[in-house]
Amino acid sequence: MPKPPWRAYLHPALKQRPNSQTSTLWGPVRLYNVMCWIYGSDPIKYSQLVGGGSLPENRAVRCPGEWDRMAKAWQRLLVEYRP
Image (cartoon, rainbow, N blue to C red; front, top):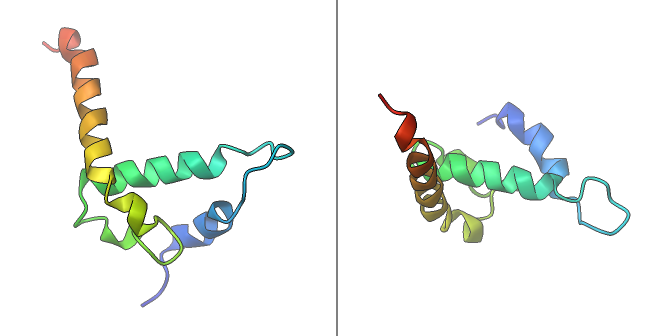
């Protein structure tokens, strides 16, 4: 099975180790967060994000809960703007 095209971009970014001289300190952290939210929104549909150098399994188990909290927060913020 061929590797997904996004993996070529993600893999090097996720290997970076933050240090005081790195200007992209939060790059990998943001990338993990976005991948976690995507996975958490539908773990079955996005199961290919877990493992294989992408989203670590120990992080993936928390993603559905993170997605639920984020979705509920947005719903609370937007409730007054609904028709």
